[in-house]
Length: 339
Image 1 (cartoon, rainbow, N blue to C red):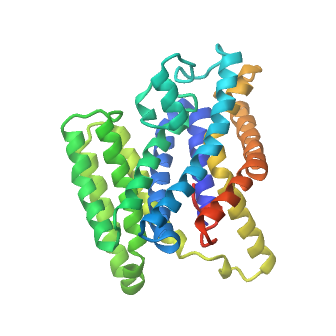
Image 2 (cartoon, rainbow, N blue to C red; image 1 turned 120 degrees about the vertical axis):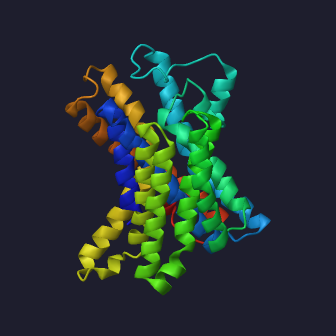
């Protein structure tokens, strides 16, 4: 069910960008949910597939690079070509080509991208944070106690950042937000044994901790944006607990079960290219005359983006995924499990 969940989060991001600008906070919640899910999946995949060795770490990072960059570079190239031929048709001021070499370097490498005004693929700012915490999760010897400590410490750390008056776009705030979300995902992963052992009691304890953490962050944050964001983050932690116990085997009809498995994989596979490509598609449709931020614009952009994403998966990402399988050494985790 993680594939369907990831697709749903991508839909929220698309809606926040192409339907109504006032839905921006919905997109922020979706991104925080993506961070939590990534923390969960990365901690799980390292232990199950790569192991805590240097060779395992190298395979893990190589796999992440192959997952993130080829598709991103394809969308980046398409966006840059659009901006070259239609410089006056951009929907937001961020999507403007620049001669600033440091900004160009950041857009190519994703290094510190969120610090720049010129972002050629607007949703890609979040990949900077993802990549950083991919490395952190791979290097730290995580277990249940370490993940629990990391999450517990992330709450007062982020509260202190807000209390000291740092803006939401500053480096320290972005990093503290990322630490909270990724450590929450890792904490949920390592809590599985305790939840199975103590069932309802331990689930209530975790839920109470999430609610208390959100209250603390809401109290210290004087802006509504962070408060709303953390509702999404903590709800994502609870959603992962529910989804990981769900099995398609519960469906008695074999055909229905097979259809759900295929749908989950398909939607999970297209979630990442959809996350990246929708802004570019929206720009194209706006350039040919469809009024932006309207229902027809949103629906046509969404359906076109889904179609383009499916083609990208079939004719581009599937080839990259074969390389990822070689890097992994075995197919313990399918390509659809890693965003």
